[in-house]
Length: 85
Image (tube, rainbow, N blue to C red; front, side):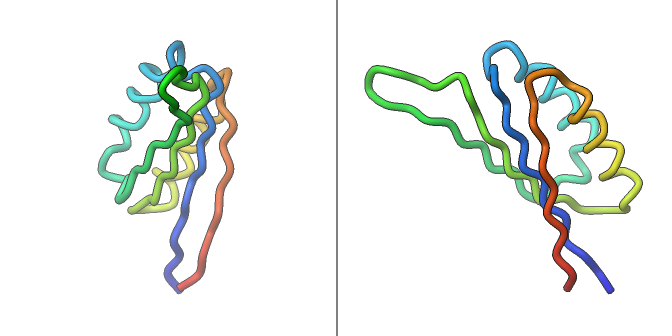
């Protein structure tokens, strides 16, 4: 049975961490079907905390490697949802 893996990545210091996060996402670009980035913004403030939602694609080994690399980074929280189709 096929499954869909969604990773949620909270970046607690967006300005400092995003370049390293981007390197990992680029490395696994062929394993990311959909990427959604969210952060709070108002007229007077742009939040330094961001949230990425990643719909993954491909073999489990590559997806697990990407997840492991993201989890090793300081300032990130990674959560995973797995849906069976």
